[in-house]
Length: 115
Image 1: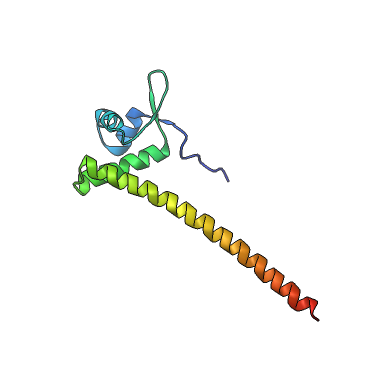
Image 2: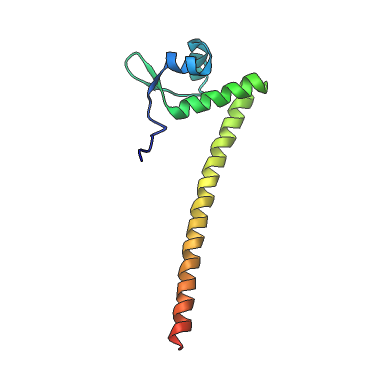
């Protein structure tokens, strides 16, 4: 199975504009406002799968929900913090599970060593 790198910049601005049904100028505006940061080559912007998903969410927030730029920025920051917190929780759960397994194995050893 091939795992796709969602951060790999592969889409040109014209392709992203077509995918999202927006004018390329809208994408340039979002870049200027710091809402998205495509990779730049000499004269091209290249967007990743993650960039396209982020832009899609920004468009949903602004078009469908009427959220303004400041609101979008707050929501994006909160989502980023939630992702960091989720990763920390997953790491903690893995740590706790590992300790629990180790404790259980030690208890089993003690029980069976008595017999």
